[in-house]
Image 1 (tube, rainbow, N blue to C red):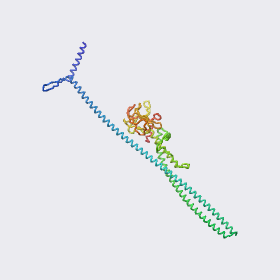
Image 2: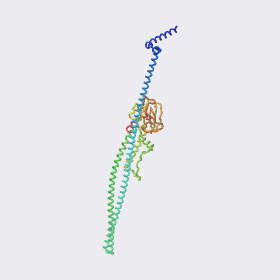
Image 3: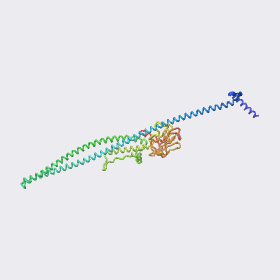
Image 4: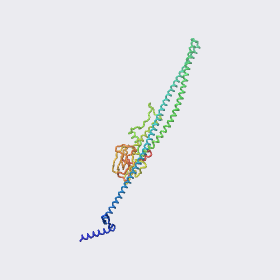
Length: 450
């Protein structure tokens, strides 16, 4: 009884479905006419529904497939255009970096040329000063010899004059007493007077010649003193210009290292101990071999050389410290700074930009890590001098290897979104002795210099 009731319900449902189907898809007859006669094929509602469903599914599939193909084509075109834009942008940045590098190389060459010229001028001034000093000493020696000769000649003249007067007095005394052959004594006396007169005339001539030579030597000495005074004034002007130029060049370097909280004395000492390349520390001038104290000009020249040596050591140290930016201006924006964030220390500075933005080393150093690290994603660590380490995290691509030596401005990777990150950016850290410090301290300190 129950099975009969269930069958009736199903039949009723089937009849209702067929009636509704017939209203939407009434029975159709397809007539086929040929020479033998006419036939027809009955298309019931269910067959029509199946055919309509298959046709609709086919049309939908065709539409979806066409849309997918169009979307792939459009997306590939956009990706190609994006790649071309990024390539053009990269080439433009590369050209800009090359121009900046060439400009800095030219400035360095010009500075080296000016430095060599200054050294040549200082050397020339020292040579002229030594030559002038030698000539002055020779003239002083000549004047002393001439004066000594003049004094000796005048003494001999005075002695001869005294002898003559004594002989004349003796002759007059003997003539008055009438003793001896007076004529003979008169002849001897005349000869003696003639000899003494000739000697006196020669002595006077020598005296006059010595006096003339002394006057000429004095005039020459006065000229040399005047030339030396002019040379001293010129040297003083050159020294003053060099001292002002060195002071102007050293002040921003002193401020840069002081702003970074670094001891300039320790930095200079470490660089001086470790430096062995060309163009290194300058040695002071030592031109005297007689144990004499250096004069004021030599002391000023040595002071200038010491300041130039200090400036050269500063330049070497600046290449080894992270004063530069890891990304170029215009290609990023600051998104997060150093300090406490959400109850914990944010150990670096975040700079957001497009994926693939070039990332550069901020100082000379050695790559000690170039791989994936939890949280940081693709990470590059560079060990610098003075116990400083820089970190560059969340890269999309690493372009250096562990153990590789890099210079300031070398490209080490591309900006990305790897690791624990909410968007493409660079997480940049500076650590001193393993402790994180604010990277902007170094960047701001070097901004006025670089």
